[in-house]
Length: 250
Image 1 (tube, rainbow, N blue to C red):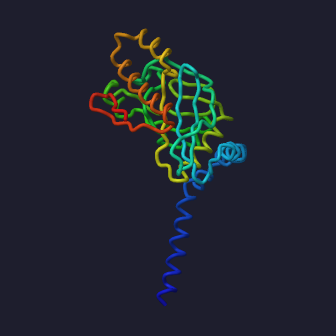
Image 2 (tube, rainbow, N blue to C red):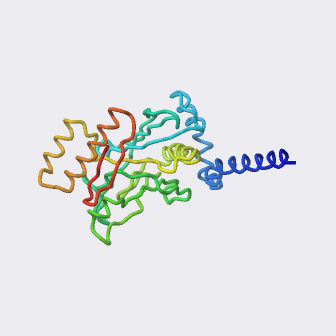
Image 3 (tube, rainbow, N blue to C red):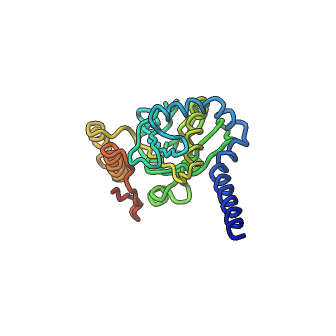
């Protein structure tokens, strides 16, 4: 009797675990645009991962974007791996604003800083969209209080007043990658947005043009530390948000 109860309990636990594992993906696939994305891109996604020795059921991803270069890099690894691999680059087809962070609603700026995906929108006005958690803690400290704006997304189409549009075709693929990672238990998908690729040369050129702007210089110094850490180790640095609006990178 005890063994029978144990077996029944084990079946219930395994069934529940399987349901939880699939629930986010299946919930997303209730929407026609997500189903279309999977129909069009699932094979491509699986092939990209396979060619990089990454199992889709263990997928973890990291996104970093460079405004001047108009690119979003997709980095990925197995959950058991220590370091990420560059899987693909997506072109940003339209930008707005200039170098520097977003500090208020209506400034047309694309944010800069350390963020993560906080929303999956399968019924977006721009086909599909992935929400970025702007304003983050740094933005709330340094931005215009009560007028920070919001609703910053990586999305389809090719229009923007502060978002990162990559066309409907590209968002289908990136959306599938993000759904798979989230479905596998990756609660936080990090997104770092840079003004440009801060190599030593380009970084020095950038800061020389804004030598009196302490707000930009402070943020860019922190982003540079994060960029250098990741480039050297292919692992994500720890990011601590400080009361000053700056960051501790380690």
